[in-house]
Length: 225
Image (tube, rainbow, N blue to C red):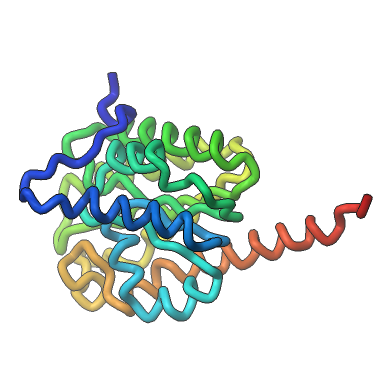
């Protein structure tokens, strides 16, 4: 059995129950707010919420951010199956996860992402699902980068025929001609700076605007009874 497809809560190794506390906070937000867009996934999304890019691009779209540092696919799957997409009716869901699944093959990671998409679709048949590609990581070329590039290729092929599922390439322009990644884009060679966030997520913002506007147009064209 692919471990990425088995919903798994994060083990509380530190003894402070932070992960489950964050999950419970997200559950409270689903009951208290009415988001049009939900971002769910790992530290790339969690860090995005603390950038100017989030405040400029995504906060005005009535977005919630359910990113958790170091989350793997199976953790996000557990969170979704335990309420994080209940009590809400988002028009779009942005998923970024897989970069922390170091022990899994590209095929396992891809299948895990597809499992999350399947669960999302069951809960929200009409929502758009937006998949930013996984970003390169590490200052210098490394095997993880190669694995994530393969994941991006597999996911792109796998979702091409799925309705209301869109991939957004955000991984271009970070690796320089000499193979390095600049700390001006990723301050720790993983998490994005303000400049890196804008470079990566402006295309996501552009697509969300298009999708949300399409949804409003469809609503306007629906004959009144």
